[in-house]
Image (cartoon, rainbow over all chains, first blue to last red; front, side, top):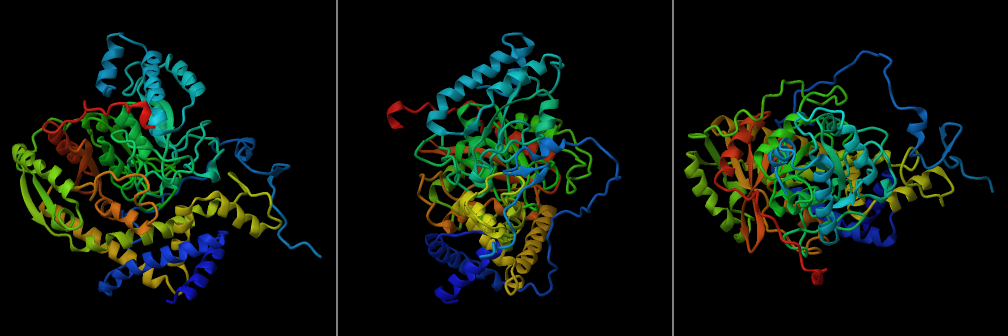
Length: 100
Length: 483
């Protein structure tokens, strides 16, 4: 992929990942990540048409537990690390843009 | 500067009490920290509380009065846990990780939280938002990463035991670079509850120590099923101490040609040469084996681990906990600014890489392909362990390198993990043992064994340490002028 096209791709990906990048970071990451992705192309050498994907190493299955009321941390404790709270709720900035 | 057994003796003979022993380690910390920065925080008040609480407990507890350092991506109730990231700079966990809870229940004293590469992403401990940890053997060199602080503190004698986490070599590489023992258990053996997630299908907690016995004692406490971790193994835990001291005569040791020659530095190979003589004295047989898919392990690892990380790190959004950028006007820009300013370079690089590998149009070529090759790697290990009991390799292809030497080239940094990564992809256990020194720099050897055979792995490592024992070899405190 052309360097310029890849840079656009990178900016789109950063937006999807909700990451603000400075122009310097965009420039640097474009160079570095293109380099890394080129190295990853090595994988295409291998024929894996008859191989099942494996997301996990152990034959473990999700373990369900009984839905019992158990002791847990208090609401106060749960909110203690929040940057902004109001009436025991997490407070966030407005979702809609302010009307001009 | 003692082993667990020696500390226990001190208590038995009433030569010192817990407070005095803990203080002797705090003294060491005071001496060494200006040079190596292994710790991010020492919870002095909490330590006093822990010592007090111990008074009502039985001195027969397996870890009674043993100071233990914990990597700062493992939650400690009421003690700051930052993951060496600005985004969690002031985070105080409301609960203990299962491993911490078990250590405390068995009498251990948590004496500090150790430095790491931010969110355990790195191989040198230079990616910490709070400054790098330095190698106690040469403070111009890195201690390896990501559990660099946990390794360096045991190496310098600031703690007898520590815990780290290993996703692609983050326990074994720093163990090798600092001349201590580091164990990565089988995936699922030790609970991940309370370990800040990086790559959930690879992450595993394990101990650092100076003797195999100390490693075995610690593993015995932290291993075992935990209902709070749905991927925690349900199997019965064997007695890890039972095999120590028993013969390993006629065991078969596999030497994978893919890990011994290509890409390994002369210095490392030369230092490890004597291990072959040791194997002979141990009475084991050596077999050259081949694991051809290991050539692809590095790209597979960096695709899978960054993909999982991109999802795991989505939780740092400036809403529920951690840093928030208050300048943003709307929600989306708040997310972006918070994450842009809160995360360091390497974390951002990996989140983007993972998001890219999972995104429409690239998923098949990257993530899906990587999970298929991962299966091939696992199958090759399974086949190999039908023929051999242990597989041996260098832990690192290079000697501990200088600070700044690799940091500007991420791919070069990633290649440091080439020996350790296959183990995490397969899920098997592996241990790094100090094998020798080259110009006063430690070199480690890695032993791997089959799934859930930590008992055999430790038996083998113990036999090896009877011939190659650096448990009493400590680095000397640097001269003040060198700082």
